[in-house]
Length: 98
Image (cartoon, rainbow, N blue to C red; front, side):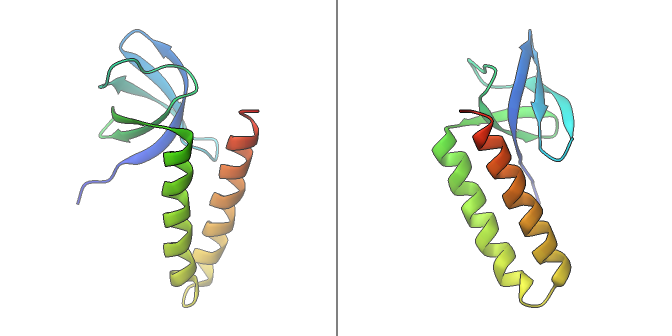
């Protein structure tokens, strides 16, 4: 299974971008798409930025994740805690944009 991880570009330094994945996790990623800029929302797979997202797309992705986690939370209390931490991080990330 392939997994893309969503994050926000903190800065771009040539062919590398510093990406904030939330929760204090900040990593370098190779820039694999054109015109990546500071503040862009991106999808990173295997250390390479494979896609850029608008803020609306980024928010929509987390709505889907939130809904999936809600369904799982009916049977797993740890999932509910994770869902709440993701919701808080997303809100903090979006309010930091304004």
